[in-house]
Structure formats: structure tokens, C-alpha cells
Length: 166
Image (cartoon, rainbow, N blue to C red; front, side):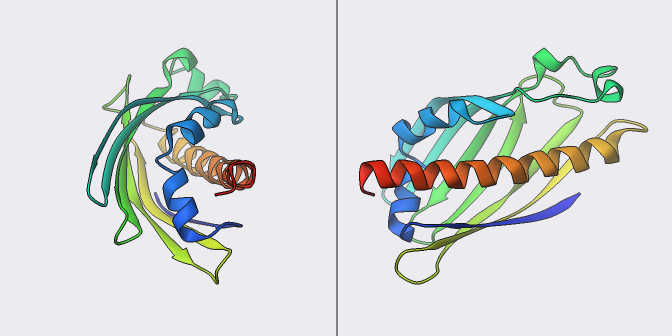
């Protein structure tokens, strides 16, 4: 399932860009609903490029149909990202810790200045769930969850940047 998400973040683009790879901000993501326990596993910087891996745990509710084929305690994954600060662009993919044959997800995120004090974050990607009968429903649920998480993350970023003065 292809998807596109967009958020407006009330902070200048350079501040938003810096926050997305700031270990202190990533640690704050652990408290977000449904997708939490963010843990920075690794980060490598070379010039304008930052590569990082963050582990997440799904903490939301699952339908009985999904629970019949997936253990809720095993819905953990690594978000592997490559940020290009010069291009204000990143590539990412989700690497499931369990059930890697059942899920693939990847995409890109662009940061666009919208005036001096607002950044538009545009994410495009694809989620594919390889499960008979429930795959399409699970894909829609994942995309809904990604949208909710992106909105909660944008709000958390605004709070973080306000507290830290960018």
C-alpha cells in the first residue's frame, strides 16, 4: 500500500532537521502513544549525512484477527534512516525484529521550509504485509498508525524545540 503523510511543524527547517537526529529528542519519543520505547541503537555522521537506527515497540491494541497470526509482544522493529542534511531528504526502511517475511516498509521524507518559522515534513512510502486474508487490513492499520505517530512526533518536536530554544 502506497501512502503519503504531511505535517506542518512550527519550527524552522534547520531546527527540525537537527532534532530528528538529536539523541535527546529520540529518547523523548519513547513516551509517545501506540509506538513507543524508542531506543537509539546507532548513529554515524559523515559531513551532511547521518545514518541511524532506532528500535521501536508497538504498544497499541491489535484486532483479534491480527493477534491470531502475530504475537503482540513480538511487534518490534528497527527504523533505519539515512538523512542528507544538504538535500533536506531522508531514506528510511523498517526492519522487523520478528516476522521479517510478513512485513516490508520503506520510503522517503522531505523537509521543506514554509516561511521562516514552519517546516513541512512530507513522507511517502510503501507498506506491504504478506499475510493471506488480513494483509490489506493490516496495511491500512499500519498506515493509520504511521499517520498518528507522525502527528504525535511533530507535536513532540514542537514542544522539544520550544523548551530547548531550537
